Length: 345
Image (cartoon, rainbow, N blue to C red; front, top):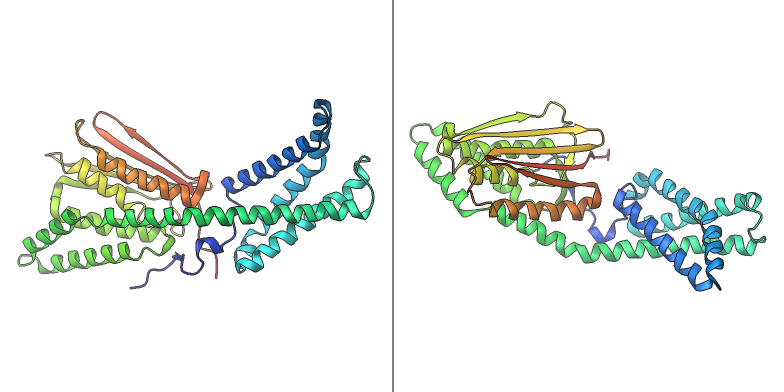
């Protein structure tokens, strides 16, 4: 069974993709690294403390505009660059950076009289800009290669956490309990379970449509409701959610599994799980709230949230975060990640 609206990592391995030049974390890293290298050069060339101050001013006068212009160009052309193969895309980034630097220095000579005249200095600084772009691309490529094993490990942990033996056994027992009295319902439950495990094994995707994640979560909750009956109540709030939004796979279902096993199941009377999914500006929010016993063991919640935190950090850097609010008789998880949707092929 094929799942639509997926972006597969089989199309490009993580180390063979350009940095996301619209990601806040990537932009901050570029700013820090370039300015750090510039300050290092300033200190190496300075002959006194007063000379350091003057050199910093001279450095900032042109390198900062060049840096900001290049970041703007990379931000604008990011979709086009992302469609290129890595070697061609990296070359395009370097050429684009050199053109931006050349533009600033060419017109800056007329604005800043202290700029050394002559084509030698113009092309020297342009080549330095291209060399810095190549160094930064090498840094991001190396960083991705280092983090890729951690990303695969986090996905594997997520899969192992999803395929819990007690969930499988409890579901099969629940189906066996109704197979004679309600065979149609039992058949539907088995189909839901097959879809759930098929998705769990199809872990070769970075992002999937949130509408598909909701369908998967509903299938999971239907299986749990088969077991818990009226003790499990669900409230969905998705009015402000765009169906084309993309999120990491198996992001919602682990939260619901924790809500069931650590919230609803220990309560004799059961309770209601509140699921709120919405868009706010350029952000997608996922909130799951469930009742719980005050003395309930929360270790399972911590393991699942640690796994989710690692996956969010690896895929979105500083642009995603989660928070947990735990009260006397409730547990609330709130995840925020940037709104992205599948680009036209």
